[in-house]
Length: 292
Length: 133
Image (cartoon, rainbow over all chains, first blue to last red; front, side):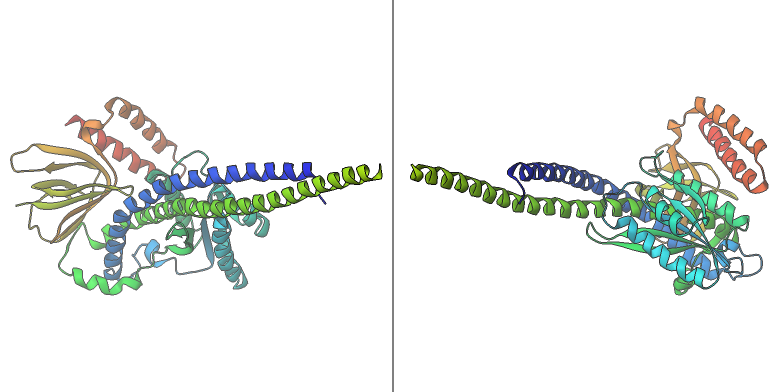
């Protein structure tokens, strides 16, 4: 049985852990509100872009001159998996879930004989991917040089990816991030960014028959396609930011509660031990007195 | 006679409300949008849009980069990657940036990189022009 002093030490150490988790929870809650606002403010642009892309994409007939960003390279040999994770831990299974989602696809693609390349954003995904798929990481960057990713940041990433696409480094690009539903629910999401998936909205295009286009539908599309990649990446990063804080808040709330339970159990054990010690001492005194 | 006008950037909705007229620098020439304009879609070259709140008020100038305009029955929506009131443009810092961008164009290793650098330069030059007017 643990001595009184040991128990006391353990209680103190659990208490200080609880203080840390509690503080992290409150920080996450405050950051979550801001991250959520950013997601909501970015929504009108992304939605508008999506509807324009959908209506244009369904009107332009895929021909030989159509942009490869829209129709693809005609092959699906090489996949680029863009995985967005966070830089910090203490967020429960947030990063693990995103990586798991990507790994499922990666394993399936590798089994089908495709080449898979990884494009990693954020520190937390790197260790796992590097261990499981050595030599398949083509790019890695973390967010240590920037506090909140802004649109220029996303555009720089998108430009880099577009350049790699033009250089023929890959045929299909998928983006992995965690979609923010609420503080409790975040959904790891897989989204194809190159070529742009448009056919699912084909019927919406019919309603926009009388619109005039300047310079032309194709030219507008060519202009918007690279921009759309940036918008999608930006959206992914923002959703990820909110999801990270949400996951972190939930995880830290659980940890704080667990620590509380542990403290209660230890305190009860501590009190029992203390009483046992007192009883033993009393018995010793009484039997000593009786012996006289 | 008011036109429903929205200006959105990827980070947030910058403006939403009724105005009288907006003059937009389309990629094939400037065009003005009033209420009841026919449905229309156009890309925008880097430059300043002029927003007239009422018939009598002066123009409010906003510099727009990476823009795209859509006119529907509901009104005018401008998507801009970057927007900034012309009055806030830092003219002094601009010349330095233009020089840096020119150097980048010269140093570009291949066509794809050069194209990106040239785009950046064009934006900066357009910004200088907008500020000068």
